Amino acid sequence: MLVLFFIILIGVAVMSVFFFSQARKMERRQLPGGGPPGLGGQPNRLLTTDGERNALNMQVKDIVSHYGDDYEVEGRLDYWDEGDTWISYMLVDGDTTRWLSAEDDDRLELSLWEEVEDLHISDTPPEREIQYMGLTFFMSGAGTARVSRQGRTGAKSALSVDYFDYKSDGAEMLSVENWGNSIEVSLGRAIDPIDLEILPGDQVDY
Image (tube, rainbow, N blue to C red; front, side, top):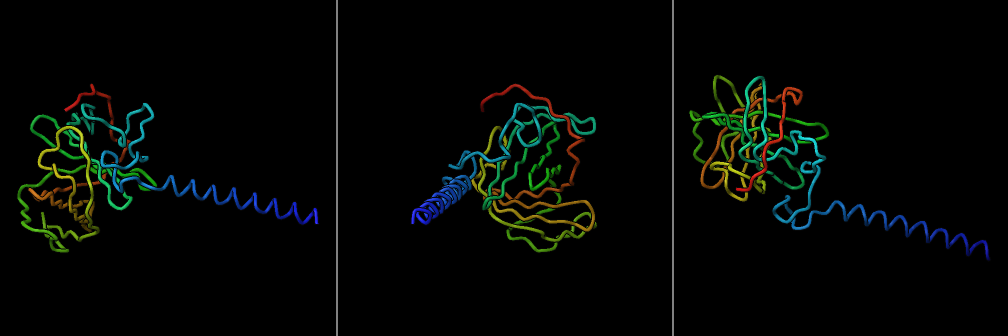
């Protein structure tokens, strides 16, 4: 009987540790407020800084160099859609504005975007195929994301955005974003993280 008692006691202890461990895992997975940092959510791995600047923790006023072109980070958008998170930085060099998109999906994925003025989309959802610059772009994803921001972000000022992603048969990508007050269309291309040089800048509040 004594042996049986100890076996039962050990079994209860093991089950207690197991359920406690599972509860801790669930607690870490939860996002309080159901949104991204700045909108009631807890920090995620995209926003964790370790003292070193990289494409996932750049701040307003940082300097980004890409193939000899130097840009200042004037704004930052953090997107959140059902657990998926990504970042878009507004890069400015004089009259030139580009957007750097960064996402950590098993590996770091970067793309550089420029808004186009000669492709007009008046309503969303747009067509599943879009013809532009002699290329056919096919819709590859769509959704609605909540957004938090830092610095200047132009017309991208709403708290949520409807987005539609397109890919061509080549390297070019197309993005359509409905911000409520405007529909932004951008042409992009994936870039290699090794081609970026990031220098920390002065931190300022807007």
